Image 1 (tube, helix red, strand yellow):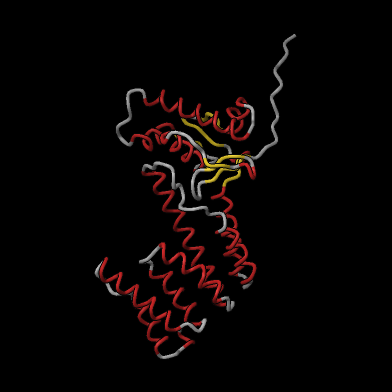
Image 2 (image 1 turned 45 degrees about the vertical axis):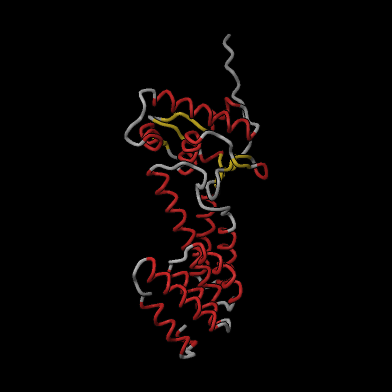
Length: 271
């Protein structure tokens, strides 16, 4: 009589992070991964495409662009094996379970199954969407709370320690634009709710990171002006104009010019 092996059942959800350095683990044990740069690229590709099969050719292009080595396929298979070993080691899960249930071989590629992985970028998008929906329904406080929770998931620049090719670079830009959009929407909600100081504190940090971003500076200036700090608001506008002229050779856009006039004319309704 044949005895079929009993499949191991492991009830665990692996936490993966890309909103900062790459993180892998279970809950509070999630940690930065110390692996070779090329393996880091493969892991990042799998994390940002969780639930999808990432084709072998896409992985090879991300690693070597249009010039893969003759041993490229074999090398990629070794990188996948190393990723599986890493997932097993950092989570304490059996290696066989990882290869059968987490990082699986699919049709023409590899997939990180989202059923066993909890990803920070997916949670960010979920909370961000909840925040936007609450604001659209007129619930400013709940919307701000959801956006606060979404933005707290960020630990630094997305994929900051992953060597990137064209796909990961595009993903990194997408994540950053999503973050800036959430910051801008939250700031607008805070200003409408009279939370000027909170908006000022948060926008001061982000405008220093994005020194030429006119939209974020406009909100920073609005928060300062409505918070009774008109002189500082005008100073921010002067400094921004100087940077735009010296670094790009352009004047601030019409919305910023109108905002400056409103502050100078003490027209709070137009700020």
